Length: 232
Image (cartoon, rainbow, N blue to C red; front, side, top):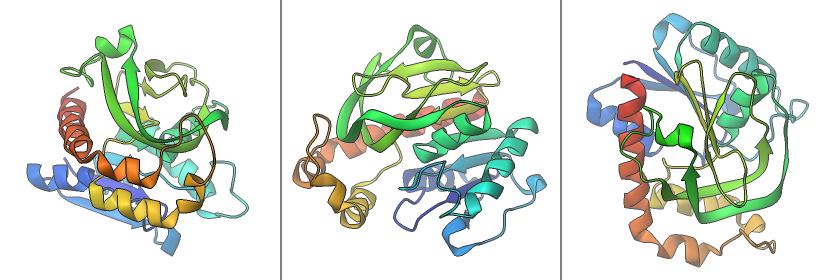
């Protein structure tokens, strides 16, 4: 399984996705879009991972790479590649599939539970998952469910937390399972202004970093999810 990831900013790396790949012996390479690195040839990878970022899918004027990136993602889906999107990555997948992406009612930052739908409980990708689990969140946007997609997760703050498309070959997560303690620290340092906002679903940096056991929990869930994903 050859993996390629698209990275939008230096402080949102693949983190435990890369650790999982290396543990499996899978070659993993990336494109740093913020450095205008070229997109890879489609024949060079089997699985595409699209990382998060502070920009929106609609910020094409400010982030020129988004135009080409959307075309690239759409082509990867049409070529039946495994496509896995996290946060902004999930929003980009939803966008190229024709769904609306927009500001969520709540900004969601910190540790909050995620619930699987009945379809999620029966999904091969989420085999072995509890019906409810805690994940890390950092987003202000959300998306409508694309036509032909299956909603597999939700919570109180965000109606569409995850979806599958193309028989589970395409998976979009609004939440983060890949985050490590160190990557969370870096994200907080680069985005601390957002933590000063008042909101029902915004936790402090101290609260986020104090939940050290949660980082191990989401790592275990991520590894289980990705093991399932490459088998499905």
